[in-house]
Length: 182
Image (cartoon, rainbow, N blue to C red; front, side, top):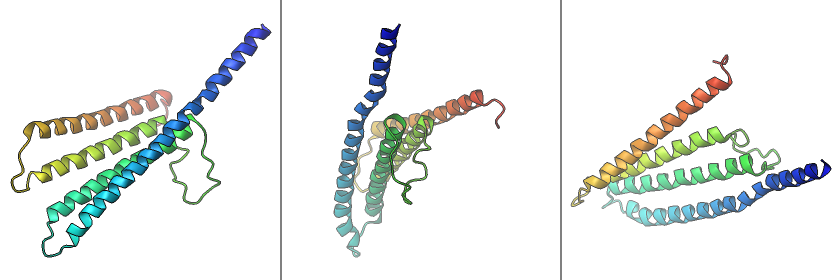
């Protein structure tokens, strides 16, 4: 019986420590954040001189550039949420020594909350991409790619419906766990 307990203990410790195999994934996500920053800076460098040419500034082009930067910013926010929440939920608590600028949601966002933030960000990113696609339709000589727009719209609606279903499942799950809590 003693041998089984020792084998079980070693197995459980190995399983518990295996969570650290996720750490490189989160470091990779930091690298993806750097890539998003590079894309954001490139977009800003490209758009800024064009927007400063006051005699020939095209408001629609400026709006499209800003929407692109908002899209990149939302994607960056999404990556940060995944890094912090994923690491804290699955690997280890992040010791920030009570830093005053620690995001309020850190340490409180469980898997369900993470899932909702992810789908919310994906819906927002999809909506911005769809808006950009519709805005390019007003450009002179822009070809109308109906199948692409249709697919973008269907994909966006799929994200919206998925978000609603996730929210409904969480609501049902919370009601089942706490039937007397309103």
